[in-house]
Image 1 (cartoon, one colour):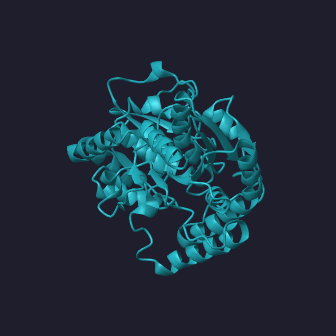
Image 2: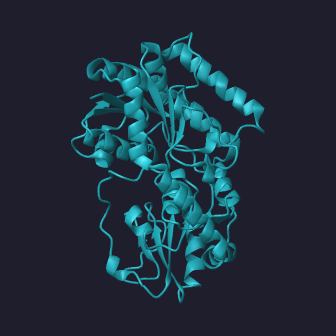
Image 3: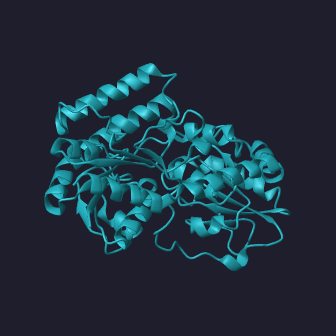
Length: 393
């Protein structure tokens, strides 16, 4: 049996896909450990008995790791890299070194935004795999922005000089040994890259702990049901958008029942009023089994989880990879895009009516769902990792 060290940023959307893969590896007798700047978050998502090596590094929401909510576009990308991802890599590197020395893994599994995992593995001569928890960089996202792509390459070269092998050449976002993409070309589009080491495994949904309690008895079978969520990292930016969405949904309360996640408490409490259900968090995966549409920020996890269940979307990207993922949804025919900063109740209502009543969107979502399920998910990813470990011996 082999040992696998998962190196992940302290971000729920990047840890969750790895959780199912780690659970499959453990079920087959392999040893699994984690390296992260937030061990409590890993244990909450992967289980209390998870072996986690603490790394230094900024954790979202703490002083120094708070991004201004109004940043968009190039400014948001620059802040993400200079204000978070690069400092996180520098800070994590010593902890990753220590974790490798203590755990002695056969393979390092590095999230595509946990650069320290890839660079430390390269420096130590260990095989490493990339856990690509967003597909945004695999569809030519930077082809029209050569200056941005060059800026990113230069920042990574400087990082390699600090913590990696100066003679190395591999992009730490994309392992030359094994690249696991938690999506499929049916969503990414025709420009999805192809190579023997690239494997599109679809969403990894298995192995997660149970979510929060939910008042299932309050769901109305007689109306269409819509989930509204902006993910775990956008509570600071979502007040106006959620208010407009709420207005659109109340105009349609005779035929739509909504479930709105509002972790920041920006919307008025509804007590026992079922129109809509407003909660700080929800058990998203089981809830999606009962939804007819999703309104979201085009976060990769939420989009893939909705499409796994064949649910069409209204996507309102905010920043980072979200505009690219939203474009994938629209190009695949599985949803409608609205402008996050300027969406009105009227526009949101129109978009909702479209995805709920135009059968083409649901048919596209069903097509992507079938591709996701065929790809194999966590089980396929675990099998590829086990194969890499065997080849490295």
